[in-house]
Image (cartoon, helix red, strand yellow):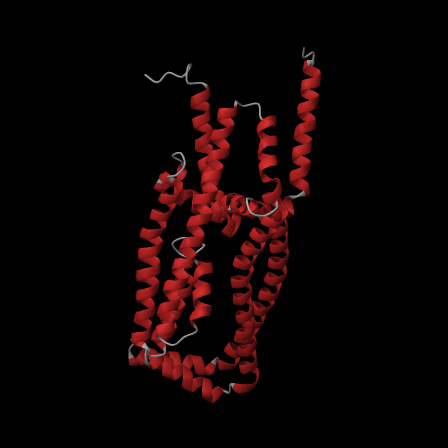
Length: 357
């Protein structure tokens, strides 16, 4: 017989709240990395189970962690390394190779290809020549600041990836036991717990799967267009794949500046090809048509959720990015969908008392 007094109930609940709050405060620097590791672990857990049928738990978790690590680290490392080398080369060119006459000639060639009147071109040419020294100094300072940002980003990224990979390994090994423990501690009925955990699992699979499939498609398609005009396909393909993590506007960060640069250089046909592959194939077909189809296909395996509502999906994704950065691409829709799931649980739990007339 349970003889717990109200005082004991309140005391235990207070300790529980303090414990949860203390843990969140303690691990707050790692929460983004832990969340990403959790999403990846849930989305790929089926593959881990298949490996576990052939190998031990530790070996299966190690294989899956290594596969995910290669998929995450190699593209990011390549982009940071190549970007750093290119910016270092730019700084060296500014310091040694460029003189005022050469830069004036380049600028004159650029504005000659622009669809502007002669008076505007002459005004731009004069203004550029008179401010050339200041522009060179600003360009050098800007390039140096970008290079420093890349170095800082690399150090933060390395720490972030180490925590993510380390957590991912133990999520594979301890994941099932942790879920069972949470269900045991939950005061809800098992069927309601299953609804919430099942919804979160389906969301993780749909979001992670759709994001990475779309990133792969956009990277491959854009690299074909870039290779067509003779530019480094691997660099721009990987850059497009990473930029595609930001829906709608992500790809534009890559193809729009490249299109404008090629057009300013007088390479009109090359600019049109990049515009076709960027705005046409990547921005319109893959982002606006194929992405929703993939998300719907992956999420249709579970119960109906927020991903089936276009308005909620778009708004929650944008709000998530504003609040949490790139990880908000996952966090926003999950918060919205889990809120809808809690409404469903409430409806099921109190269906006898709700007036549905």
